[in-house]
Length: 410
Image (cartoon, rainbow, N blue to C red; front, side, top):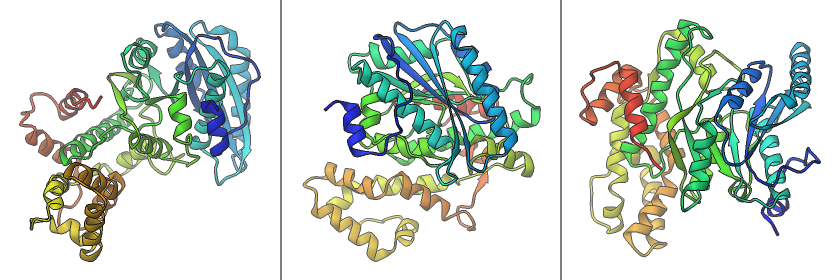
């Protein structure tokens, strides 16, 4: 049974779309959900201007709308799809495969479903040419890419002695004042500071896998995608859940140099993410983030796992015990101790109980407290830089950006 048959036999898989076969040397398929966004043509031009890799490339654009989408947007989507279809022969770097889905039930409609439809199709296409190592790349319609976009992805997955199964792609939001307002850019710059602060703070806390989980900034082999059960149809956060699940099974690499430039524009299409965060910052003038002190509490907790295994009496962080509950906490530790034979396996099992999802619930519990309250991103960023003993010689954004891309997790 090949990887596509394995996937189809065990999971919910979108039906096959295209009947033609890819070129036999196809190694990269980029999947782009598109909803009411004619910037897609600029994104495609950016892809076509990038350096061509030593393999054939396909780009699947999934134009999508829901059963309750406004008629004007449905019509605009159709216009975009028709234009894409008429321009298929215009691109030299890749084969363009546009597809349109309409009337998707409200319960599953959204970017997660569109991404899944396109990525599932990529699985079928790679299976057609018996290439389980073909790379499925996730991008968004409002992004630009660097000149070395394809070659960086190719090098990460095909040149290394051991092929990567998945990788995040380093990013930097597009701060072009010809395209976006100064207000949008300033708000997004603060939001991006938060994203980088959050990853670095997790790294300090000791979370085993610290990575950016952005829908336009990751790639995965067809085989690994199938083994993980494919993309979720969540209306938001589908990338986060997929990558966290994948990271439990195999290392997720990182392309360190920024090769994706997402838009900083305002949007309310999804419950969270860049667009909504930028709007909130613009509306309120505030960008509050998790208190850095909470990550130091988590660091103390996570670093105590080996001592906990030995059953020694230690000063467990009170805030975490209170959050979990004393009896439940003791039961979890006992269960992990009984089912492991050494400190290393005990720590690994403990991290499955107190994982990134636990961390986020714990952090959110301090949202409205006087102890470790949320703080402005600038204050949190300074505390993080102080931890690394970095004296800011430039602006905070530059310092956090430089620190984040230097702390590579590949």
